[in-house]
Image 1 (cartoon, rainbow, N blue to C red):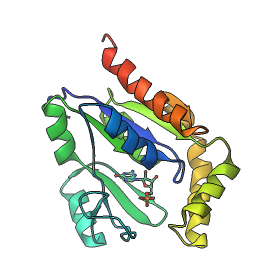
Image 2: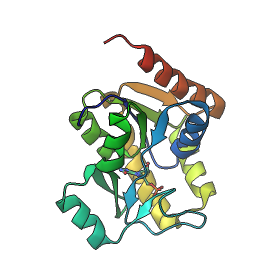
Image 3: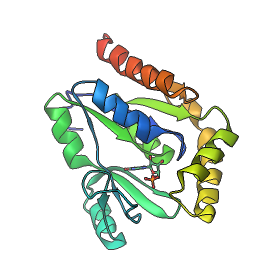
Image 4: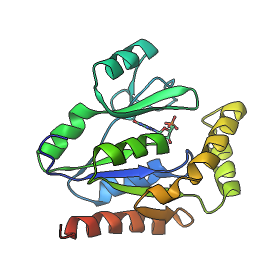
Length: 191
Ligand code: 5GP
């Protein structure tokens, strides 16, 4: 990363664990931290907006972005591609702003390798059953796609030891407080 003055925080963990909810609370409650808007080839869901939730891309556009090295990280997830564009991340960092990435585990591992200072937080469900219930209730995917996400979640849960912090999303307010505390503590850390 060029002239990285801000810090990179990564919130990772299985789909449906509540990363999005926690991210939106963190952005409301913590100053000087900005969300990296990802690019994806996934279909836009009802209520999602271009450039707010994602930059929605065709497969061809996404592949072109990979070829021209526009991503800090990118990964395939449940049949679609997701990636964090470098451009806005570098802009925030070079202005001394912190950046928050909300991404799945393969991408988080790439960030860990490329940005050795990045702080990686793994958000886990209290149980696999709770995650299953949440994904079904969320009703954003077909049952077949929910099954794919649950299978992926089992694999992702095996990788928790690769990250710096573990937050269990049992009580939402506590999980939000814990993520905020991690950000605040990291900002006070003496190198
Ligand atoms: P969804 O389709 O539910 O919006 O996202 C599916 C998964 O992809 C979630 O775990 C989400 O955190 C992750 N994701 C979103 N953006 C990115 C990204 O830019 N890179 C990676 N690696 N994962 C992402």
